[in-house]
Length: 640
Image 1 (cartoon, rainbow, N blue to C red):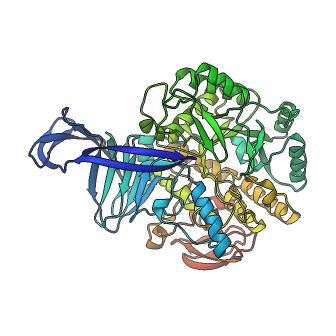
Image 2 (cartoon, rainbow, N blue to C red):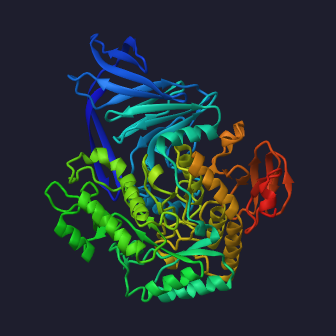
Image 3 (cartoon, rainbow, N blue to C red):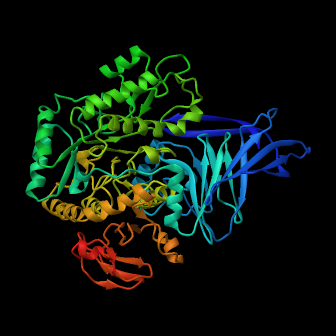
């Protein structure tokens, strides 16, 4: 253990972190004391001085808690704990990891941040201009940040264990050693280690510790949620076009319902959380008409306020914003413009923001929304509560999710309304019904494009968060990075076999192919939306399993098939117990080599039967490699 100081500098949600450690003490056990319900180990330093007690207690038959008690005279804010591990063990989790599923050999930074950094995007744009597209190129793992960090992981080997660190300070987990791993925590904490005989039971035990997502509203299974923007007339025209093409429609999502701003980055939003009547005339009436047709309206909100609009002026007058050290409202730059942030540690500000959601979103008629951001709390800010923002930063997205959840529950509409979040930390599991994978690039790149959402989703699943989806088609569009027809169609195929099929126009809609850009794409989208709708009873069943048992909907293959090849597969997944999805992730591919675990499988579209092993399957657009176990009872219920 030791003492040090850490500095955090933030630019557009990305963090540079410098840690200076002043003192360290390597500790060895001195004495073991047994008590009725726990034991205690005392540790001494190299001067034979007892400086720490470690409390060890079984919370139940499957979990052990470790607590640290430094002696009062010690100044301690660093703990480095090393555990033995088998060289063959694998490690999964730590939140949302976009390029690696098995974390052995890596150092993981447990710190919530913006995943898509301006520096990385700029370097990619320049590199592709000079050298051409290299979709399989990935950066060093240490160069990535993540929207959703969590100090939780699963060890898969001869034994199945989870490790959860209960704390919100900055942490680093070092998995580079062959025979051990080390947890480095900047502050006191508790560590929980749980055991189970299989992964399903391990997930249940972990969810007993961390919480579970609730079931989703029934209406979201009725088809796709169409991402569109640009005003009432545009929505009416696009909606009519989708209806004529027989698209199965559950909802329409207009992220600009509160207004837009056009910047160098593209078509962005005016963060003033109330209906923009000029852009969306008659929206209040149209929402009711659409709901009569079974089509719900969804919007967008985040914890920032546009400094040129009236909600910010009200918050400023009431002192509701996060401050800088000069006592001024802290203005954070996001892409190209500054914004203020509501201070959730101020009870009045918290309730004020909740009231905005209740009145301006829920009472107005929205049935869902994207609850964006949560990663941007600056570490040099001043909070109303007086708390250290370094200790609150990781918690911030979970506090934001809690606020949204309470607004819905206090309105008595928990079974009708849901929100999906981007950023997260430990308590997000109990407050958010659904995550989405954030702002992927509209391309085929392994690190930021279509392929990245699969390891991201599976690592979240192994961290305890079981219901996740992505923007079908991606979001981030810049220079030559523009959405092509084939990419959108393949992404829609992946999203079809997920809890939610939702499209996004991206930050530069005019540079991206959309689901209704031409007859070919629209016909494909209609087919996939109908297929997604057909999966409704299956999805409901397994999402109920997530709610009751904490078992994730989208699972790695090894979850049910403990085979070497299954452990090494990061880009296929199980949807529930019986459906295996192997999305096409490369441009121009019409045939796919698929790994099928030891079972018998039926292709859900061609109806061909396959045994386990590696098989080559035809995969033209509209016929993704998706399989169901041949002896599954769901074949009859899904008419397969």
